[in-house]
Length: 151
Ligand code: HEM
Image (tube, rainbow, N blue to C red; front, side, top):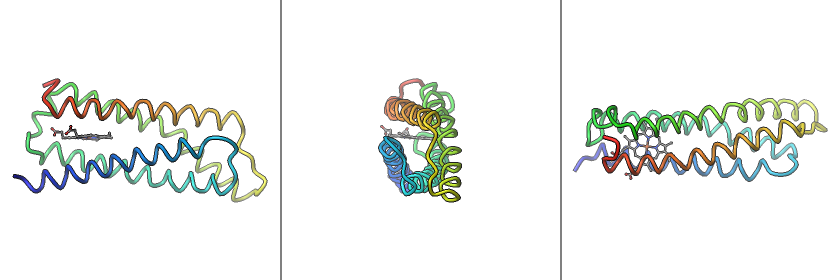
């Protein structure tokens, strides 16, 4: 038994579920018209998105290095790299929403009658939907990789 592996696995799962919850919250809040408190909440939640994603990278790398299977198991495993590519894609798809949330929050703070332009809202909704879809691939790859597929 290895306590480090267990602690990293628990932290990894908790962080991953938190990120799923954040993407879920953003998907729900982004629907319909955005009042100023909703814009503020989105900007706030999105800040946590960045923190959680950063922690997932740190803990994930920790699992690669200190996990029971050894780093060679992962670096030579194409399913691991497919998982990394899916995670990187989710990260890239989150850039436009993050930039928009910061900008909308700034504009709503300066001007209480600010209304989010329809085209910007539609594009952010598409990016968040795409993130949710690609995110679903990550546990699929994770489960396969953990059971030796791709090695
Ligand atoms: C830089 C990012 C990440 C790295 C380096 C990483 C690395 C790892 C490693 C090394 C394992 C252990 C697999 C084993 O037992 O052999 C693992 C498991 C797992 N990862 Fe990640 N991970 C990352 C991001 C994510 C994300 C974003 C998700 C989101 C769903 C995720 C979901 C999982 C799940 C569900 C498992 C458990 C698989 C199982 O035991 O069936 N990981 N990850």
